[in-house]
Length: 310
Length: 306
Image (tube, rainbow over all chains, first blue to last red; front, side, top):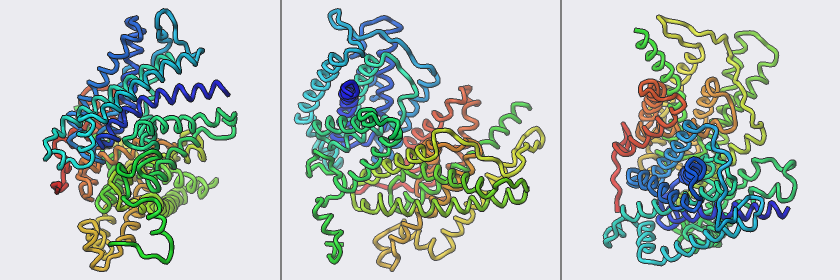
């Protein structure tokens, strides 16, 4: 019970890092990208290859993973960010699948027994979950502070301008392409580091685990918590991980089917989009969907009242 | 000579695969043409269609081994599956997309991803994780013509797809409903002023697209088996086909589907890469077409207005 609770906190941390990256891309800059599983894959493999094949320390692989995934993000971003909305979503989805497809073909069995991460002679093993929680949440806190500062800086405001209206942003002297690619690289880099921690925790890499599903889960966290709101995004990661480990947590994994949590993710997306498109902690100003508030919508649905406007 | 025949063989296989993609792509393209959004759940409707088809077919067949009844049962199962999926498509549209019709473009897209998750995981829950084989409703011995082998199920696939496409083209171009559909796709508010019930047309578009997806799903299950996540990859590739042909354009979806099928089938041996990387070819084709000609082969170039 406690064990699963700690597990949830660890995975929530790993996914919170990914969700912070996704938030930078989708929440702040408004690009719907679905290839975070690909960046996660690259980060995981970077750590596994550097630590196992080359015997380098984990801490060295962390920045390298961030740089490599950022670079892949750049390579993906330059051609695809010219696309908008749905097209971008599909193109990034395709690229995420290409990364997984290549990983599965090059290394079908995955990598086992990657060396543990070490700090001043202390080994972070999955047996001692408390220290692992400290490790991961330290980095989540760092990412949180950095991205918060970023969002409130000139760069962050430029990104929000790009999200709200590209043409208007451009006419105000903002280089739209530059900010879009920049946001994409940053998001990809953070996604890559999340992969490092996942490898350091499980000590294995399985190419089959980086499916489209992971990208959707991360997107789900961002949407649920509130796009553009970092605290909300971390809350979203907690909620989603809680849903996914809930059967084990209450010891009902034999009763509740494994698909139930994924069905709930689906329901969460649909219900959130209809009822509260700005997410749990999202502000009305940054709402994505219907511009009406919830009460307005409710009153519009009540019988006997006419809808306003056309 | 041998390599030529081999490539012709890939070509024939590609056309079969492509006609399935084309059928599914039609659903994407029709919905996009009217609502300007990608129905992500379309691939999962295909999966539901395949399951319903398989279940009704085995139920209808019972222990009968009569050749005529087998074929008849197959077509009855196909019609039942089409009807079920049409209703399902309309239901999904009503519940998950209609409330978001005036929302930002990303909202229905995310909602559709959610629906897709519910459908594929719901199916995995109900039908189990194991894949099932769709039994051939006839003896599937390949017919060899000059070194080229064509199986009866490939012929069936092509025949059914061609018939469906002809019926759809006639429906869209010759009937009053089809005309209303084209009008709605061109300009929804004006067509509403002309007395067209846009809600009805949108519902119908979803019904037709979903019914075609059901057919595509049943035909695809000969080659791919039936399993809960079969729709994800097939659906995505059909979407790629729709984009290649020019999304929103019905003829484009047909051409794009066939083209993608052939490309996928011939691409791997032609480039000398393992056939497991054929998905990569499909997505690479998508990205190239999006960069070179984002409006697709037959699409119109839409300028974004300020």
